[in-house]
Length: 207
Image (cartoon, helix red, strand yellow):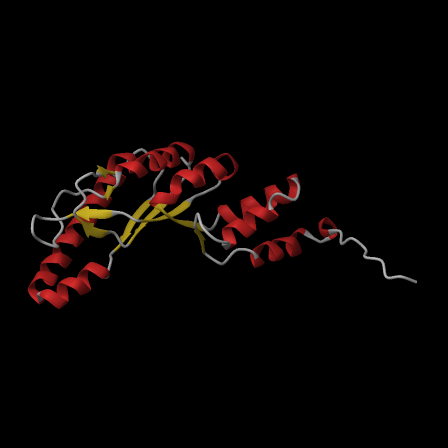
């Protein structure tokens, strides 16, 4: 007799087993989102398109306890594609691609208590803040110092996330190594200034 493929009835599995299978498509703790290439995030969402039951199970399982890590320039396409699906589920955000303005003729950050983004990306951030109001924990990954003339402070936008329970900035080591190579005393100043900035910004965002 010719071999016949028998369809596998995925929903006949127990809910516990289905959740273990969902975990295969998403790493523990952090789901990194990119607008290019194939990532665990895309795999997870592809799985959620099978049917309504699997979609509900998968999205709640992924985006309730896990952190979405994303570049600020990817926020706009991310929100347009998935905001309506996971906007109320997501609790944890890790954001990259931000910077501190620098002092004139220096690599040291100014004491402006601000986090800057290029104006073309502020729309994506505002879209995110509007659509993901259940965010409880925000981490800013490795902000660097930069001298762009066009800039927008994102702190007022982050202040609109009124449900925030924690706000953390993970310092960048890139600028520090550049400064250490040029002048060790400047590196000490850089550390002191950025620590002060981090605390000032955290206080403003959580006020």
